[in-house]
Image 1 (cartoon, helix red, strand yellow):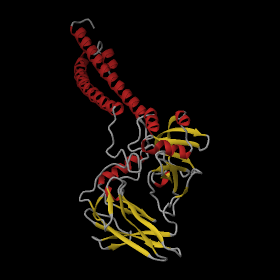
Image 2 (cartoon, helix red, strand yellow):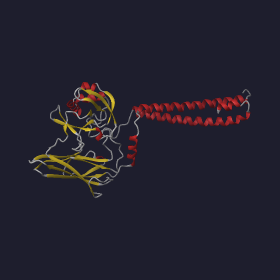
Image 3 (tube, helix red, strand yellow):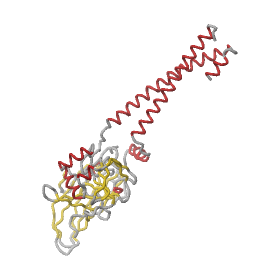
Length: 388
């Protein structure tokens, strides 16, 4: 349009009015594009802060972490390894991973699939699922236990985790997750065994009742302020008396509730466990314990766990022999989060590149409109002085 107006102006002087109108439009476009450039520049600056100084997630750590809160770098991991913080040197060594093999790892990512197992601090699946325990000798004395579970039991198929990936002479392919220090393997390591490290002569089970809704069984959705009762049972199936503990983990339950009745048990707030004294069960005898929780008045919209995807997932999950999962009436914001997790993950690099290209494009059109405005002024000046 600009070229057409200028080329026809010597033959039709009346077009000078159209050029004046066009000049006004160019001025408006220049203001609009300048504003767009300022807004885009601010957006890029804010995104740069998020990339170079990312915020720490509110739930960046979990009770299931091998290293609580994860590690910042491979150097950070090795420092903790040398200090044997939280027994990680003992744990990795028992699994078959050496310091030299950790040093040889490369930063990559791990996708959740059916043959991938992830190490956790505590057992989190029912006895019928493919969870296996890994006892390890502590350098300070005694024996500890950690648990390998299929990663798809706590994370969606295809979920991606940042990790250091390497090869072990005894373990084969392995990875160490950055978010929790967990060891990840293809298939279950040969050093593991049955996950039930309690007395195999007993059977355990847990049942549920929503007192507020007066519903027995796991067939309801938990609402705000609901009172929910759990009953745990242990039975001696052998022909002789056995001593057995009663311990149940409440970490997942207490993300959305509070314990209002421990049923005489002792609650350990640090490890999120509710336990009763060890008892002697005579043959075929069963013992019960009951505890009650109350759902929070306002359900938190906290994002799904960074290190433990089963954390803040809008489900009440508890294991005692069998596993109970109860859905929660979560706030609508959690539904938005679920939709966002279905979108493809692009990463910070492509995002910054797209923002930079957008900024350059806006800047180009701004200078183009400004240049055309200057040229219009020159044309009008030359026309009015008769030199056009």
